[in-house]
Structures are given as C-alpha cells and as structure tokens.
Amino acid sequence: MKRTVIVLALLFFTNLWIVNAQTGCVSGSSIRVLDANNVKAVLPNNGSLWSDNVNGGGYIFPNDNGVVEVSTFFKGGLWFGGVDPTGNLKLSATTYEPITYPSPYTPGPLNPNTGTTDIETCIFWDTHFQTKQSDIESFLQDWSDGSLDDDIPSSILGWPARGNPFFMDIYGFELPDTGQGLAPFWDENADGLYNPEDGDYPFIKDATQAIWWVFNNSNSATTFPALSPQLEIQMMAYAYDSPVESVNNSTFYDVKYINRGMETLDSAFVSLWMDPSLGCFLDDYIGCVPEENMAFIYNSDAVDGDVGCSCQGVPTYCQQPPIIGMKILKGPLAERLVNENGETTIPPIGVSGDTIVEMGLSSFSYYLNSATGQVPPQQSDPATAIEYYNYMNGRFRDNAPMLTNNGQVTPFGFSGNPANSEEWSMCSESIDVENTEFRALMNMGSFRMLPGAVNEFTFCVTGVENVEHPCPDINILTDAMNEVQDLWEGNNIPVSTKPIVNSVELRVFPNPMKTTTQIALDDENDLIETIEIFNVNGQSVLLKKGLSNQNVIIDRKQLQAGIYFYTVLTKNQKIFSGKISLL
Image (cartoon, rainbow, N blue to C red; front, side, top):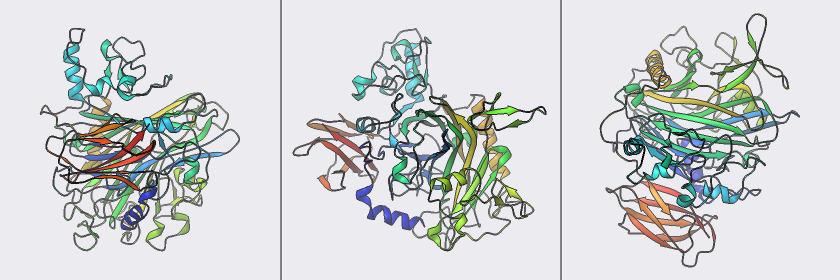
C-alpha cells in the first residue's frame, strides 16, 4: 500500500542517495516540474517519472494552481531488457527507487568508448535543462535580420546540444562529442554543431515548456542480479498551453536509447511501467486499447475514495473522477523479415531483417502488489531479471500466458471497453481492488540494438476530467488522444497567446563550490524559509531556519570536500532538493 511505502521512505531517509560501489555514483536527486498547462508533472533524474523521490504522487491533473492537488499516478518508470550474443539477459528496471533501494539509473551520459561512467560525470549531470517557447520567440525576433543585438536567453545559451561553445563557461564541465548527439536543436547553418550566435536554438516542437535530461543504467547490478545493458537514455518532456482541451490536458515525452556497450542487444523490449493511483489508490482499474497503442486508468466505482471520499489521508477526486491514458505516438524501430505472403516475422538472433517497421504496443501486462495480501505467486512483484523480462513479454512472472475471461491466450490485459459488459475489462469482471493494487506495463518489442545504435519512441499522457463512472465509455478518452496524435504528427498544435508564467526554479551556483555558493529562488511571490544540508550518510551538517530571502549565501566553513545534499523549504510550502559538490 502507498502508506507503507511512504513510511519506509521516512525510515530509510539516510539511504536516499546510495553510492554505487563500482563508480562512486549516487542516484539522481535533481527534480524539475513541467507545469505549462492543466497538468503538473514532477520529473526526477533517476529513470523514474512523476515522483519527488520520497512520496510519489507527482502527476497532478487537473492543475488547479492552489487547490488541493490530486495525482493520477503514484509513480512511473522505464524498463529495458535484451539478450547479448552469448545468451545473457541484460536488464534494468525502476519501480520504487530510491525510496527503498538504489536506482538502477545514474545521471549523465556514458563514455562512448567504454560504456561506463564515473563520479564526476554523475555529479555534473545531476540536473535538468529547461527552456520555454517565449525564450525562443524572443531569440528568433532578435535573429530575424541575421544578427543578434540583445543578450541571448540563458536557457538557449546553455542548452546542452552538441558543440555548444558556451556550455563550459556556464556549467563548468565539457559536453561529450558523439555522433548520436545530445539535446535536440535547430541547426540554422546545417554544420552539425550548436551555436546560438549562428542562429541555432533548442528544437522543442513549438512546446510552451520543455525539459531535457540524460541518465544511464550503469547501476543495474545494485538493484537486482542482472548485467547492465550499458544504455544511455536521453529524455525530453514537454507540454503546450493550448486552447485545444485535449492538448492542454496532455504531456509529451521523447525517449532516446543509445547502446554504449560493445555487444549487440537482441530480443530487446522497452516498457513504460506505472503504479496507478487515480486519487485514492484503493479503487483503481486499468485497461488497454491495443489497436490505438493506448492504456488507461479509471475508477472502479462512482466515488473516488475508500470510505466515501476519504482515502487514508490521500487527496481524492471524490465524485468527479477523471480517466487518464498513455498513448505511444511513435514507437521504436525494429528489423523484420518479409515472407512470400508479404507478412513480417521477427528475425532469429544473429539474422538480419530485410525491412524496418515501427513498433506499437506489443503487449499490456500487469501484476499485483504482494504487500496488500494474498495474491497468486505467478502474478506478484518480480524479483529476478527473468521475471521482469517475462512481464515485458506480455506474460506473467513465471512465464505463464495471460488468459482472457474466456480462457484465450492474449498479450493484452483487459482490452475491452468498460462500458460494454460483453467485452473483457476489470469492470465487466467486477474485480475487487480494495485489497489488491495493480501495476501495469506498456511493452514495445522485440527489436535489436547494435553497438552505438539509437532507438527512440514518443508517448503522451492525456486526461479527461469528470467522466461518468462506474464503467466509463473509454471512447471519450480514445477520441481525445487521437486528436492529440493528429495535431502532434502534423506539427500543428495551437498554443495560447496569453503571457507565459515562468516555472519556479531553484538555482544553486556555483556548483561545484569552493568557498561559497548562492541558493536563489526564481519566484518573486515566495521566499526561502529553511535550508538544511546533509552529508552522504544523511546527517544534518548545516541548518538555516527563520529565513525570509530569495537569495541565500552558503559558506562552506568547516565542511570537507565531497558530496552533500540540500533541502529548501519556502514560505509557500514548496520543497526543493538537490546535490552540492564541494571541491
């Protein structure tokens, strides 16, 4: 249950940043918030989604700005599994890290020659990079005559794109130079290098707000016994402040995988893992629409809550539950063989395909939270690499197939419309979820990744407010998500013309620091109230209370060189956390 997880997080607070003994790296602590529209999405830098690394519940919909925040997910994350040429399974998967144990992911890119990382890289790259369309529009207006007269906006000047000549001066470390690139950009003179003075700027698909970050799965072996796939993952999350309701209720995610290992990964799958928590976590149903590459979450009854609208202190939607969907807008690419009938088949390991296809949703699987009571062992939480991989293949933990209510084998769990009692859904089955929590996986595969290969996919999350329950008609969500996909594919998403409110950020600079550093809050309507700094053992080494400033100078005093972590509380009860390195 969610309350159990939160208590564990408090008990193991000193282990939130756990060091990888091999690399010296720690789980990422940087967090940014995507909040350009009717959604507020919390984005950590550790392979997880929609979590503040402590309490979960970081996908707020609708984003009512000041009203009680209700989340649709407790947490999400990325899984990847593939087989090397000798038959070894290489896998990384995130669930509740770093709440209870180390994350398999650490910040930053991997060395393209060795597929490894080091502590310096992890420290430098434990950050997110944010830009806004308002900055880009201002820049383009200045560039309209082919020259720049004004100062270049900092989000453009410091964008982590290949070859940026200003990056080192701003952040204090070098960008890697690889053929697979870094953050996306518009290349005005087509020279392959990013330079704002040449008219280059971040390419964020005209989104109102975009956040980019990079991490890797070098920590896989510390989470469960598995060989690391040696993958670098680059992500960009973005959102549109749009007059189109479906778009304004959506967030978008571009995910780019790079194989930095020396071996081919075959029979590979990538999965979007989710722990649904549509307000109350005790009454959630899940389902999928395979032909639409889509999964969804809805409420099991008309009122969101355990007893009435209450749910053990967790905010609920009460009598106005929404439905929320995840849709694959663009899937990863895969080799296929074409037979004499024109049908495509998966090539055997070591055999090249003769065509390339785009993968959609290959399966939608689920398992049960074993901590909630008696659950069938074959449907409980995975514990070993092969059990994770079985779920990614659309099967159960023990590799048994999923069966429909009619006993037919299927890779797609609960694929019917809840409004149609003749179709297979959790609603038609009247499944009791009061004491059984479901986890879900959207799986894509299989495909092959050669050394140095890149594979990418894009997905969106879309909500529809105040939908009639129980057993809602999922066509309402399908129509909304198809509208989003059509606009996204046509690069024709309308955006609002009202002024853009900058997302609140906390800046720490310089970082790494030598003698002093400054903590600055970019919100004129809020003030820093408390700053506390911890060492890697979780011990408080500095505490400043009773503050009322937007900028605070921190003096290292007697602190030794090393890694430290800060927590900042503001008067408006906002919490920021991150990492400081002392030289």
